[in-house]
Amino acid sequence: MKILHKVGYVWGSVLAKVPNRARSTTRTNLCLCFPDKSDTDIDILTLRSLQNTACTVLEMGKAWVSPIEKTLALVTETKGLEEFQKDVNSGSGVILLAPHLSNWEVFGIVASYGMKANFMYKPPKIQAMDRLLKETRSRSKLKLAPANRTGVATLLKALKAGELVGILPDQVPERDGGEYAQFFGQPALTMVLASRLLKKTNAKVYCGFAERLANGKGFKLIIMPAQKGVYEDDLLSSLQGVNDSVQYCVEMAAEQYQWEYKRYRRQPDGKEFYRS
Image 1: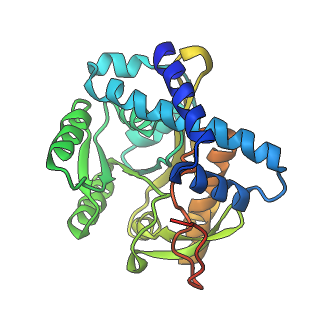
Image 2: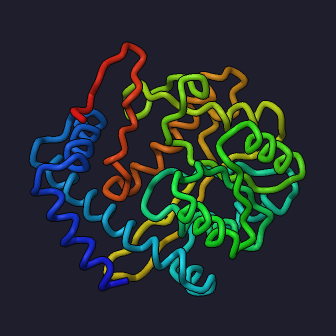
């Protein structure tokens, strides 16, 4: 891990200095989300973010191909795991919001290990990559549900059976699959899936991530109950609760969030924040 992170820091440092799409998008997002930060602070956060993103990319291979025991061993600290496991084992069904914060692959594998778990994912266009993801995630008996109507039906059935359902809540959905809610003070098209599943079940909602520790010491698994707003009957209020839950996690480790993702690319007024 130490070697991977050293390489990642060098790679991320280069990305922060040379003009490229990742740097441009990261800086745009940080300026939108942290308007009170100085240019110097934005530059530092841009550097740290790109370094951590590079580390995440390099860690994926380790998380995918290592024996499951070694992937589990990457998590050396936990917070909130026992309460989360207790609710999952209660049989009432649990939705786990897993944003693109630090290494979400490690988080998903470790958080769901030993449980009947179903995670929604967007199948890659490259079939070989799709097979790799399925084989990798199936090591922990985690089932994958494609991001379509069949996948949604699978998740609903799983929740009603008292199982765990995992959702990446900060992906930009298609227009017909989302509504706008604030995320760091900006309107963001937000997927309605979690909120609509809640309306049809008695599920509980958690949000979390695997925080990358310094000096290659692995990860700290952090899981906490979602913000209470997610349970509101009003759809827009529930969506705001989803985004508030994600934002709360991001604020705990902002430099480890995937800021190079174009989270605000679909705006209600057609505004364009990104150059390319």
